[in-house]
Image (cartoon, rainbow, N blue to C red; front, side, top):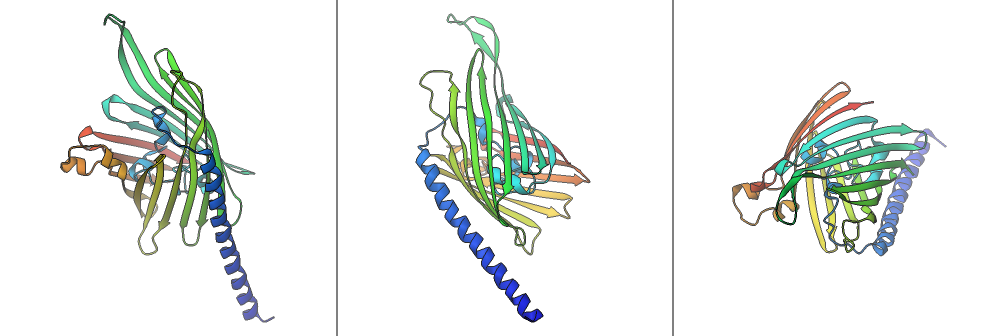
Length: 326
């Protein structure tokens, strides 16, 4: 066999291997959706609102369209398979919502011999409220808060295909009452490093409520997220989009982008159709409800990220993240 023939043989072999992986991924997706759909009969869930929040400012700035971002820990709570290619890091985030609500998040990604391991913690504080007895007499204050803890595992199962899953605890405290749930997520991610194309499918936040505020509390159901992202060939920019199932027959679309200037300075933007539900009165400010902007600065192993999300007339969300590569 000549050198040219050997090279042609290798190219043909690689072509068929890539196509076989793509076919396997598509078949796996259909099987995955069929199995999980059998488990799923979605219902509105008023509890545990923090489950749908990004883990850091990059996620907020890109309109929460982060399920296929796999360079850091940004997407691991939306698709655990995104952890498979994430670099080891430590992150701490502070997010301020309207009406004095705020959250503190921490995320860590570690290497291991069997794959990547991640841990994420969220604490969501709704603030202090006045407590009154049945006669309307002020008898003090009480606080309302949620906290979440997730362990995430991800690994490559072939050249381009990655698998991940997570398990965690969600807890909500309202004065002397509490509600608690065991939650899980599972995801697949197809990632071509050469073209930077990522396609992911995940089933998020399914589980069981183990303790309830009231006996007739709604059960906890999950939802699908289908995502795709790509680094553009002739522009230093990542485009990302997610389609998320939030109720049985309700979906929202999230789109985001990130300009990368020499891997040091980042400009980010995002938008979501969820913003259309935020305002009933249409004016200039409500038209942009749900849109977001952000920036990031990386100096060596340290990085700072900022994000602002407009809620129209309702106000805005601001987020700050400090991270360090390990």
